[in-house]
Length: 449
Image (cartoon, rainbow, N blue to C red; front, side, top):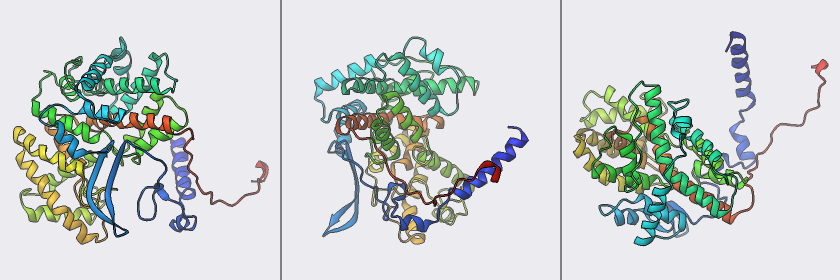
């Protein structure tokens, strides 16, 4: 921008900052649920769902008290679900069936669903060349969103919101999402990083997790443990209640009558925000900074000092947060982190990263007491799923540009289930209210201003 326009923007941005900021007491005065949360931080209830439940507290003698975290998909505890398929089969397709159709599939139903997903995992002819390869972007989330919107042009029933049509569209997008994700990365890596281009077609006989690793790697190779851990990560990120930002975006946009492609693109725009989908990247950046500033990372004393400095806003990004610790709902524990951690050590051993794993373990052990020491009213200080997920992706050789897109590759299942539920259960557009705090003004003609 030219210098005059630059000065205009700078001055007007300061004006915006002054007129658009309201005193905190006004929120109390008008009983405004800022961030759609009540005074205790709990989300305002705006609807009903049967898709999943997230609990971090329970009622004991009429009092809400912290409890071990619980996550249930269609009523099934996530720990029971993962125990049911781990070391027996891959779970992504099975859990996707559960979230979409409300029941666990038998073998015949699971085989049929996997067959249909494999058949749908095809992009339109020349789509990879004409859409994905054009305008390659480091922001893979934006690239995928563009692809999703372009796919609407190939759908003769793109605007139909019948349950049957929306289900067809959702299964298709779930199926091709790994291709959009990996191919968008390869386009960026080739055109921006000047690296070699690899476009491997998915294998219809493989699971979603296996295909991601196959398409991502130049030699298409992976170990069973690698595919198992990635599959588990996808299952754990697949759904997390209707109140998270991107799922709420899905339901808000669906309620307006918008089409599936626009709805999923809107959810993508929500998820890509660093306050939502980028938490594991912040953990990785924090751990990188720790290794640069802690001379002996095996020293509990030095690590404790670094974490204390973070909380005192003296280290890392000076925000006072130990990333990966705590959660908006869970209090004592995050069940996803508990399930995930059981495989992190196995992968660390296979990859020769046990020393790094021990550092993560030390941070997980030391952080809660430090947080409570400095913030005695903290309600959640346990490790969440994002604490270990970035480390896992790093061990799998997955580039950081793909961390949030992989989150989306999993979460599109939950978005799809919520979109269908919103269509079936509600015909009202979601319309929250805002309180206007500006007094009426008399219009002043231009020549008198």
